Length: 341
Ligand code: IPT
Image 1 (tube, rainbow, N blue to C red):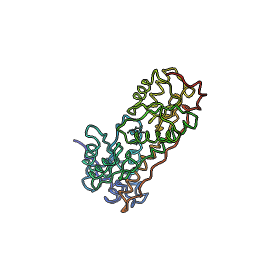
Image 2 (tube, helix red, strand yellow; image 1 turned 90 degrees about the vertical axis):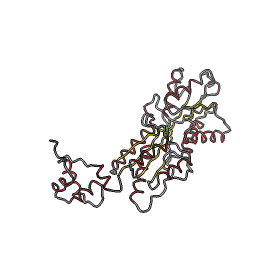
Image 3 (cartoon, helix red, strand yellow; image 1 turned 30 degrees about the vertical axis):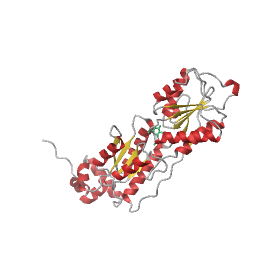
Image 4 (cartoon, protein in one colour; image 1 turned 60 degrees about the vertical axis):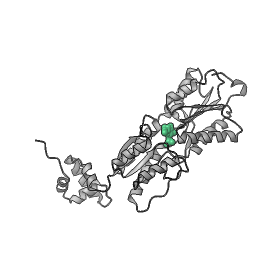
């Protein structure tokens, strides 16, 4: 016979507290004294008590579940964001349900999460303002926080200023004396990629410069590698500013294969500073978005919104930081730089 599973009432009896107290501990209520909480938790683990989340959900209005609709988790930045969000959510007693946007796009992913009765939504998908507004409306009462929308989108958003970030990368190259600068842009479908490109072009214009060449990739290392191969035979730029570190990784590989050494022959600056970027060869100079911090703050904001009568203040854009490592150096004297790729 299957042994009877341990119930909440069993825990209450063994810990010598009421049923309600055990329930409050499970729901992370602040009204339980520290000592009582510890006693209840110790009893739960002694008895191997496994809370029945489904029953809890059916009994209450809240499911203590957050939903994350995200870009493809095969990409490092969204994956590291999801990791930070999941850690923070569990620390605050929330479960996380993830939906990657597939063929159904953002709307499908959000509907899938709403069907699982999530309390609130995080949306890390590149969305134009009008799409974000439509999705926020389709979520009805469920609070939503957007992580990849234009700066002026009229929805709650938590993100880095693409304008400042892109400026930091390219101004670093200009300050080192580089003038013949190539852009390796992200995909045209990305709002953030478009914003980074706009900012690079604006900075170049301020210096009466234009990009030597514009290349496009899809954020992956392979696309960065292939984009650089298309330069083959042309005049080598002095520097390349890249819309993310993964594409920079592929670019580094192509440059290495062409027999060029960094930063002596060419400078490269990336964008993101995902955890791997310090381990590239050479270690990558890049613009850091503290993705972990952003993920944590996003969860905090939503949880605060769920628990307070008055919503928390709107989040201001986060600031990026230039991290100078070993892929950038001062421009050479003009005569030495007109090498072919
Ligand atoms: C953006 C990253 O910078 C880029 O590397 C790529 O992973 C992209 O996400 C995927 O959508 S960060 C985003 C919050 C603007």
